[in-house]
Length: 394
Image (cartoon, rainbow, N blue to C red; front, side, top):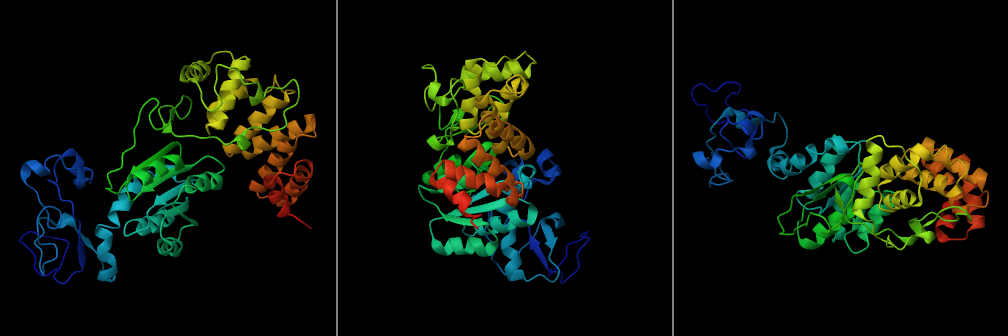
């Protein structure tokens, strides 16, 4: 502080401060909440702060209109602190609005690890318990992401979305921050997003994301109602090993295509359940639940399956599908109980045996998981099964 105007309190000459950039009127509804960057009267009143509308932010001296725009920095290094007023504040703003989604076990994806993105990684680590996955096209930037605290740093290419989904057990990320904004990164961001997630485009690269029925994704009912999420379920994500008499995707009616789902069918089924209607497990309802699991909406599937699980206790296919839904929604105790029932009904079900091992493993019970994973690999030599068992090789 080089000089103080009349009536200014709370500061003294020589104090070290940084300046908050987006100024508002200080009196409107947005400003009263501390959101001066959303001031509804700034343009009307001709408010043009230095650096954001008017020149002068890099001058030797800057005139500040109000003490509320100053933040004391104490003994912090000004060279390291000043970027936080812009490059730090921008990702902070984007992250803060989504903090309620960044609980333990959640995932946040950062697209673009430049001036904003590398601070976004650090802020995510400092403000939340989320796992951070950083994506960039440059190896130097990926190294910066790792140094900034990213749990996983991967190249942003045509395989990136699959890697993100694999790392999140097919669910996707609860928050996707796009600090680039060009069209390929916007498309990639949409593919990484989970049901009911936040996708925030910070970069001004001009990319667009269509929103609406049939545009850029699938709209479906259930817990994620109104959400838009592109999906492309892999063939290996379908329950394996269902026995004769059970219902599997191989018996799919002609009315439901392999990778599609009729919105009206899902909406009717889930909405009726939400209203307390009596549920009977018809073939059609089973198909809806199966499609919801494939489209990574396990909670929607469980709203159909749970009311009939006890009545269908001896139905391998139904128990298997419920076990998969519980696993995907991280309800590990219920997944364990349901998958144990499947293995009890059909000891030769390699998929359920493997899934039970994975469930125990995820619960931190590796010693209990090992026998199931080894047995599944012996029954089915698929690479996925063999790799899981290899971790517990004697």
